[in-house]
Length: 168
Image: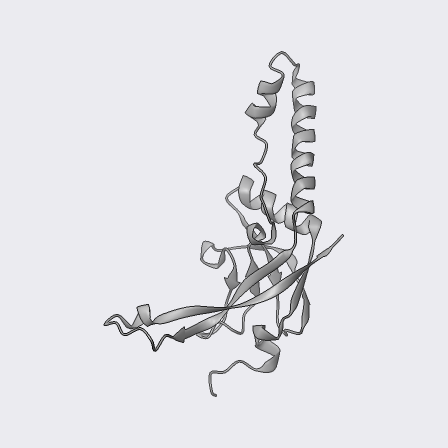
């Protein structure tokens, strides 16, 4: 074994990742509003165009963007895309207290309806802001231009930029 990833597990093969707008909005809302980590996951075998699907991460160790369960080169496990990195500008999530403060004299049902409308407006803003490019980590390499006593500080995480293609 050479330690080099095979073609089917090499994330540099990926040119674009397709994500569904609704999946990104759901993942972002779950991540922001709870203690859960929800990502968009791309699984090997990798090809030029890949589809990312919503996935709940079971351990905090695997949260955020990166390769989960990969080898020391970071190349064989699924890729987790943080939904925050798929949205150009994340609008502030509407808090119940904020929507209630807009009409303090409203009855409970009216306040619930106003908050639900504010959340739906937020979700629509998120769906419209999905796109661009995202950088995925593809492994670590030694930086020979830097000479330090601490060997770990000589390593840098390499990334690979891929286009985000929006579905729905």
